[in-house]
Length: 297
Length: 322
Image 1 (cartoon, rainbow over the protein chains, first blue to last red):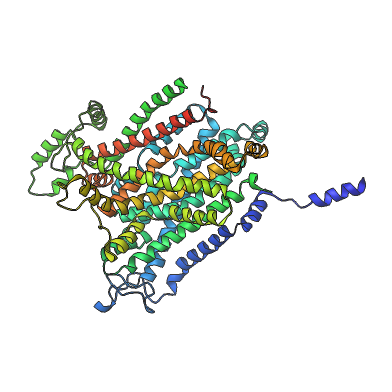
Image 2 (image 1 turned 45 degrees about the horizontal axis):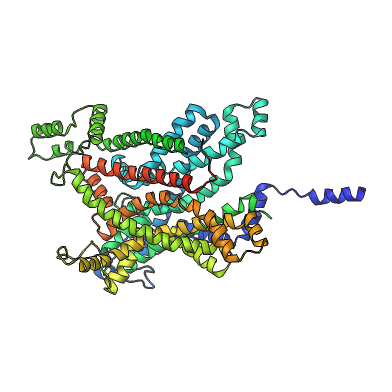
């Protein structure tokens, strides 16, 4: 009897918290781990790579023979119509594209969390108003309005693009979070928190939000890849990050004019977008599986 | 059920008005199209004031909204400011025709390819087939559509000369006999339809696969197998029928992707459809045309969602609405 009890104690001594389990399951997901590694490499390469390349962002070739060169040992990805080194520009463009991807997801998430949390927690009229507004925003075709907004909001900076993408990117997050909060606010720990006098704000941010973190992380991961593609699409239509600041989108947009004589210019920035987006999609998928306790065995 | 339908349809009305209002406000931020003409010394300010009055841009914004909304409701969609003053309805009629043709073809292609593959992947979960097509669907989801378009154009248009590199028909083919004309147009359709459907295929495959997986692991299928039904009957009769229900919502989910996807694809392949019309209307600040385009696209989205929602309720007898 006593032996049995101590044995039980031994077994249960190691506490496997939720995040520990998530990490454990994520490590088993080979594709997700590989994607994480790949994305890490891409981020490192884009952040530190430009310090080590031989060329600078806007450095042009000296002679006409430097223009539209095919990939070679001097210019790994060739040169563009101004004789600029495309490898350097793709790395620098990666900084911008990744920055746009991450920060637009972050800002959209902030809006989505606030709208979804308050709508779900308080319910009633606030919920109705916020959710009808979300419905309206959902029913408007995004791309045309992004185009309008980018011509209305002054400036040509990166932050403008971030703002624009975020303005139309928060609705899915808001719906997910509202749904979670609707059920979480009925839970016993919420009642307990209320009973000991925690304020509504405290309950929302301190007690409910951490419980809604898993789907938020998944949606954010998938969102980064999606927003990088969005930026590229905006750039393609001529409303993205403005040259000479390079982004993967506008390098690609620029390349289409020389498509017939310098097709290699089209390949590399597109591949960069594709690989990064695939990485984020795989990672998000792995995270979703790892964070779903129903799949634990 | 009837009350649910009625409720859903009635809910559409405020949504319609809300969408119109938000779109109107955002588009009004750009300002009226005539003020910028002041920089042109050859146009007299008096003419600009007259134009503004003529097009109603001198009214306060709320009055403009009501006037505009009322005329939209009564079917008077007005004239385009810049596209030769042609009626908005006429311009949209042409463009919408092309977009619907392309979207429909892409939708059918994406549906026919992705749903069977998704179902088969779920039945054969964790096999080579499943892995290959899971990889393929991630590939599709992560593909920037215009880049894919470029690549196809480069390979099949510029390099191999198999297919035309843009447009909708060979000049001079308008008066050709029916079949020759169809054959000619088909050549122009191939690449854009592939691009437009490829981007959708990835997510649809994933969607179908997960919806089928949900069913495959359920107890009643084990029961069906246990009582000795052949595997084929279990899958086709028992699993598939339930798995197909959520796929109906694909109809609604597909529309936003097809509409915004169309804007890019149409630009890449120079198709005179809604996407391009909207884009050019916004670029030239052609307010009546841009508003009408945006509104039609929004309403297509809303209607698509409604239809998907109602279909879902109709095909799934388990859903009870009060």
